[in-house]
Amino acid sequence: MKASESGQRAKHIPPYSSRKRWPRAIRDRMKEIQQCKQGGDWARASWLEYTLRNAWWGYNKYVK
Image (cartoon, rainbow, N blue to C red; front, side, top):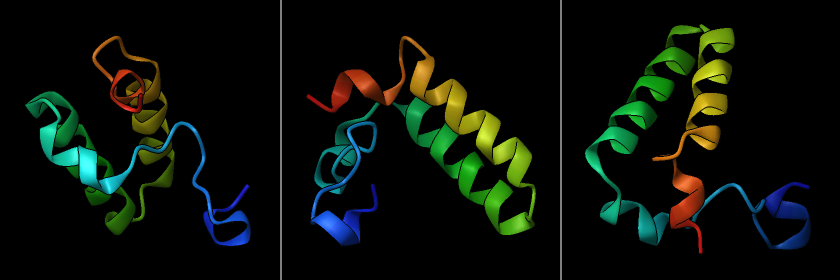
């Protein structure tokens, strides 16, 4: 489901307003993902997003 179609974002994507309170590990991983996307390494970016969603320190626990 796209955010533009329903006016809601997917459950695994946290709001931007809460991102400033995240630990450094998450923010560093998000920067690395953006660099991979800008460099065209989409396979690595996809893998990093997967590990971020499934890590115990990942952002799923901050979505609540």
